[in-house]
Length: 280
Image 1 (tube, helix red, strand yellow):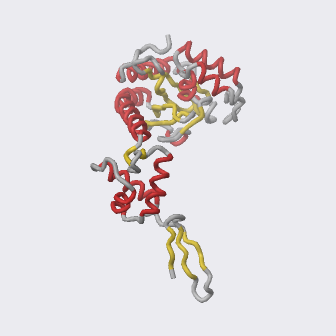
Image 2: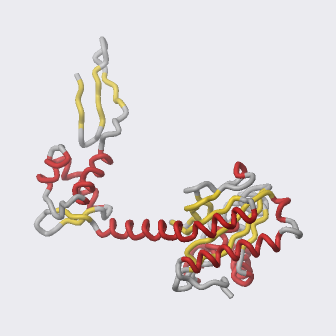
Image 3: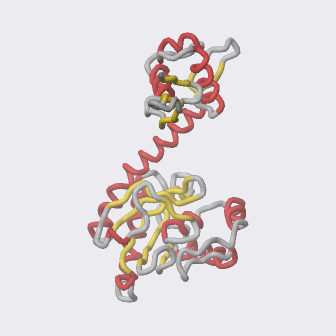
């Protein structure tokens, strides 16, 4: 005999010969699928609807549907009207706007990112702040791509790496103070800056020179250069960076690499309507 508890989303199957039961892993067609069907219904013309109508749409009993609706309301995916009907929540609008901004930024910055990769031959990155870390939203592979720590969609803490430290330098004073209150941080390598004082000095240096130089502070054997991308209000919204093997960042090559990264970041800033020329 098989029983399905929709509320707990677990399936119990009677064992053969022993009468014992075992719990199977839930199938994929469960709560998230139903949430997706509900959102699809609202995206396709449904404006406000009660639990009974929504239950008919997704083929689930009313009690289960009500629990799903209440959970969606709790996280802001749905709003509940005074008459008990539900509609799309304001959180979806916020998420949609954020995704749109990120997609626009990636699209507009991509030519500068690709041109930089072609000029220097190294992996190039477009990185943004997201939930207190630096997250890569675009990455164009170059040489030695297998040794790069930052993957597309991956993250690094703001206190290490060239692009993350540029984003750290772009924080407003109050936000920077709150972030550095968490110091000392965990070192990724012997070269990682982890103390608040050292990071404040690094922020001042990054702003003063218009770029951040990472020499093995995120990954041993790897160096990187990052520069800020500004929006039309003059806020740092992203960082463009390159990364390669440490010997490629010697005194002979470093000035040219820095110049090209800054030119690429200025081009990306111009593409999104921001000022060029960095913090200066």
